[in-house]
Amino acid sequence: MNPRSFLIHGLIAGLLGGLVAFVVALGVGEPAINDAIAEEESSAAAAHAAEHAEEGTSTEGHSHGDEEGGISRGQQAGPGLATATVLFGVVLGGVAGIGAAFAAGRFGRLSPVATTGLVVGLGFLSAVLVPWLKYPPNPPAVGSGDTIGERTALYFGFLAISVLAVIGALIIARRVLEDRSAWTASVTGGAFYLGLVGLATVLMAPIDEVPDSFPANTLVDFRVGSLLTQSALWLTIGVVLTGLVHRAWTARAAEAVRLEKAQAL
Amino acid sequence: MSHTTAVATPEIAPVAIPVRQLAPWALFSALLAVVTLYFVGSEQGATTLLSGTGVHEWVHDGRHLLGFPCH
Ligand SMILES: [Zn+2]
Image (cartoon, rainbow over all chains, first blue to last red; front, side):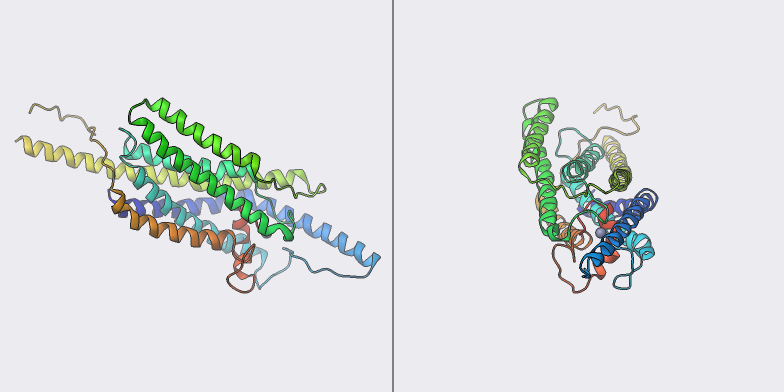
């Protein structure tokens, strides 16, 4: 159990996670994206017609319906989506593996399997669930191109605060664990995280760009689909990575027993 | 040394890997993560390194479903 084996285990877990996320995204995410694009096209056509009726000007905007740069909708929803989920999954798995390597042996008597589960669970909470609540993702056709810079900065800023706050909470919890109970350590760490992220939630500007005319069902379907896609990715990484760490850990424990027996002879 | 070793998986204390040993691996994966996060999550959106919209369009659906702001 060294950094290298943790990284390799993480990469394997991430590859599988990316593949599972692709399948889930295809099943629960793509229908909502297609609905949103159909909605965008029909409202764009209506707006275009209205504009022509008024002045006769035409506007070039970002549209998803037709091919752009030679990439079709089928490519975006198939190989393109797979590229994104698998690439993202592998790298995320690698980071989770290294995170698990850091945590192993650093939280009292918790086994490496338990600390790996802790890392992946808190990773999901801080990198997916909390950002999803503050800045829920939007389907195509929602959001104006003028504010993409601001929205990107807010999203990545909040993501960074949330992840760093959870790392800070773990460091604090470890300190407290030295001479207090695990309960006190957990509550102190939890309070630190919630306090910091709560403050960021209140202070950081909201993003409110969904047009009133956008169908609510499509919006909800998309947001739930996005959450399910990311949950599938993290859940697979958690199950596979803890499984691989468990295997390595029991092998090592068996080795320790063999050595002890040999010495006793 | 009378020890009961009949347990299937004995309790051995987990040993922390020293930070100095972890650091190069952490640096390597962090770097890789930032590059990937950027290309999947933001390239040719808020900021652009490569010309055109090919990267944006190719990872487009993944970018939306992985929760990133798209356009
Ligand atoms: Zn988009």
